[in-house]
Image (cartoon, rainbow, N blue to C red; front, side, top):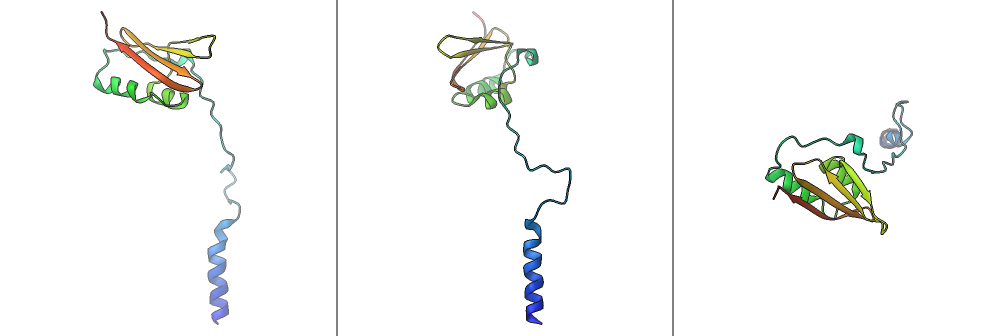
Length: 113
């Protein structure tokens, strides 16, 4: 009797380790390449507030994927010969992000003169 209970317990423990019975579930990993797309840029239709400026500063030292997630897509991207990218955002006045080797190295915003 003990052997039957032990066998049932082991069967219950290891039953979930096989392949998924859901044919729609995929186990493949999706790789997302984070590249800016100026056609997806959205204008900030107001003056930036403290939260916007904090979001801008928060991307320093972060990879492109995080920049795009936090700030969205830039209005324009300039690629320099040294490999640095300069992303300009459609905020009031000037908002810019510098990216080198896929990491944000600096951010800048000025609200006017």
